[in-house]
Length: 212
Image (cartoon, rainbow, N blue to C red; front, side, top):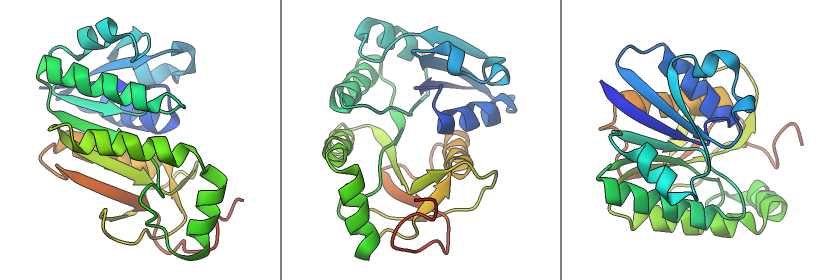
């Protein structure tokens, strides 16, 4: 049996993961989130729900205790502080396996006009996403960092990945696809340890996402 803590569990990617893990008999989920009303009803049916903020370090450490894997689906202009809190709690409780969703574009890895457009649109947040990635990589944890393309609500699983030192591909990817990749890593935690992966739908290259 594997114990998984989902941080930011009301996020749209996270809800795909929670739903998928609900179908597994070998996974216990703990969902930490600020607003339980945002959870799809079925999503929390087989999970323990903890209402709170990752910046509540005592609460986070309590939720972390006994977990095998932490999956973080966090955002906000305090992402640096949230990331530091997660790393500290994992180090204090001895939990090693971390999956963390960040953003494309933090390494200037997007070629051409799409890279220029992405930088212009996202702007300042790329800096704190990058600082979060640097902190995770320096943490000594068994991490997997994901950098998804622009997200869609398409009901499909269709994605490819690129490594940190490779040019980013495509412009979009479905939330369901990113959720599927996260679920597969949770179910096979020895995969992609120490990896920092771009995630995109194949054959979606362009100057910007199709819906913009």
